[in-house]
Length: 262
Image 1 (cartoon, helix red, strand yellow):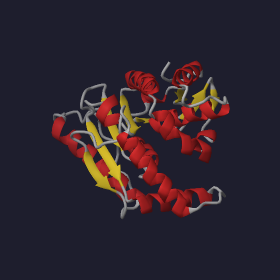
Image 2 (cartoon, rainbow, N blue to C red; image 1 turned 90 degrees about the vertical axis):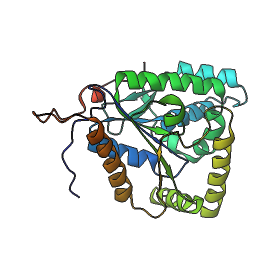
Image 3 (cartoon, rainbow, N blue to C red; image 1 turned 90 degrees about the horizontal axis):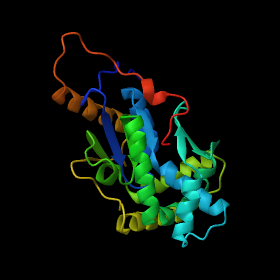
Image 4 (tube, rainbow, N blue to C red; image 1 turned 120 degrees about the vertical axis):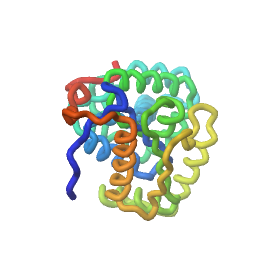
């Protein structure tokens, strides 16, 4: 598919934050990755950070009810991204954990771990540090446009029916050679939606000013095309016409090897 050349992303000369929020299974990670690539922005997968926290809890045998110990363990592991990889690789103490954090035991625990208030405070701080280091960014998660970056330049909220999200997740698992019970997946997704949307800190909700998009009947390309169209429209509305045509964005500092939250 033809993709038009990147245009200058210039809501501010050195800043462009696009947020993508929504429940599990709406395609935020894959859509965010492609949108970032088309616009020449870095990608922040905040779900990977919370999944890494859940993996730490499991692998170290920590009781998730011991919130203080959970936060201490996660902080000690120094979670950060390697932005020299595409997509950025999630690191725990310098070791990639991209495969581990997608395993089913992590998926089952991540909502509970994500509800720990002190952990969310820690993660929000790290996510804002990422944005400071990589200010031209697509950030996806549950609370990016509502809590972490409420002043984002463009906000999206993706949604889809629980049945469609279960079907997509089941297809991913089958492609990975895993056995799957699609009905059980749907129940887990509905339970996770309820847990995420009712937790006291950083609940899942549509951010103020966000564009809602139901992806249930849309293909991957249709979703990314629509998000890209909206971002480019916002750019056209807010960027003054420049006689020299402006510069075009590249990865630049956003793709610097070894960059991370600190």
